Image (tube, rainbow, N blue to C red; front, top):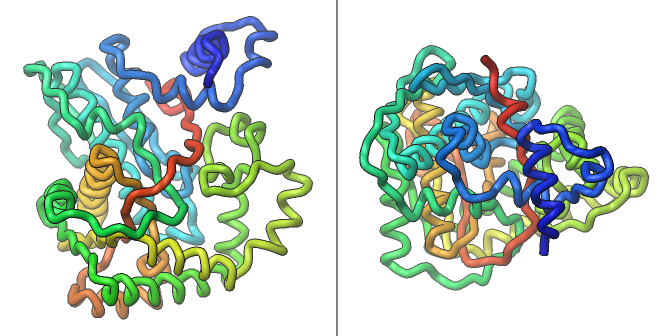
Length: 357
């Protein structure tokens, strides 16, 4: 339970308001996360829409976006200072992340009585807002509670209606969703995930980059408000001086492969998203479909997580595409889904940190 005074102090801190130093020192990680996920307010409109946009899924929780607002227009641009060249050398995941943020903003705007029309302008997504009837939706309501859960699920199959709604959520022009629920099909995906994971864990540059984004405890996460919060992955919070040397002992190729094997075996299914073409506009489209999938899963009481190793390892990607019948098309995103536990949530930077005039 978050103390009300801590929540108010955290909300003020995230808004950029001046607060008493003693109150600031008492702000807890849980209060900061709760403040970032507070219910959407109608004013200030642009700040609130950006706050909900930043709750989107994104690679390594790097939050690689910059927002700008002018009149009834909000633009989302890439923040290339937050790119991950080892895992994402062509910025594919970065632009998928921008698409995820745009989808959150569009859905949030509809609940405030604004129709949002996105247009791709080079590297940017420019979203024009026009007043319209309020259109609340289950997907918009799921924005502050959505989370990726890197934990085993309960292994139960999803109903036909659940699968239909998940597939419908992915519908986006020029984007194909491949939904796999048969155990043999999931086992085939697992083989590629494990092969990709082994390749990544043997890659020193990949491992250095990954570890640089891990936040091992509340203090580290509060200091940056980004990165991979260890407890959000089901790991204990530990002091950095202890966690870093232990990582080399316990974060091993065989250990991680076994975790992924268990996670996929316990999943109700796997979805693969693939765009018709491989360019920034289509990667953004994949991000929008990806975000809707996560929100629909959340609205249905499900959890999900990314298992992107087969699409991140370039040497493995063509084989993975062929196994799915995609031909020359690039598989963009791989997600597993099922019923599972809540885990601690990752932090987000406040709108003031990601908005530019």
